[in-house]
Length: 141
Image (cartoon, rainbow, N blue to C red; front, top):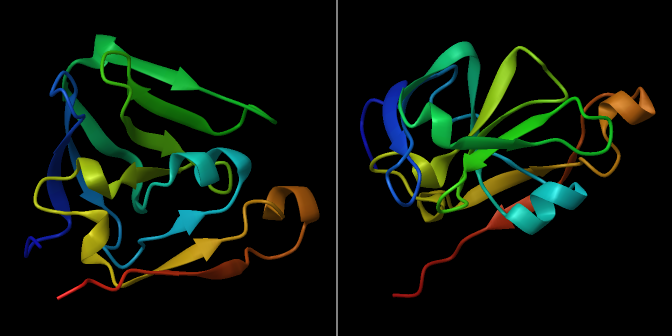
């Protein structure tokens, strides 16, 4: 795993989209979500503040998807289909960034990843954000 985890380069699978991201809390913000969309997508994400992502190449290749309330905006490459980042519903001033797109980082670098309860989203329930569980990766030797 890379040493400096605050400013990283990223790209989609085909390389059409390239970006630089400034992470708000390095890799400490790694998490997943169990909402209907994230459950199918399966990505581990880290946080970046609004303005923390600079698209260096391929902005015209970015597509977006919104569902349910239409608040969160999920971005992906229109060529290879890889999800790169999304503007969060829970905090509109923050992005979730797919760690699998970040140079030198793999979702399998994390032995444990908290899974947030997106099924019972704080914006729907009015209750504080809650962790639904923990995803663990145990490498075979």
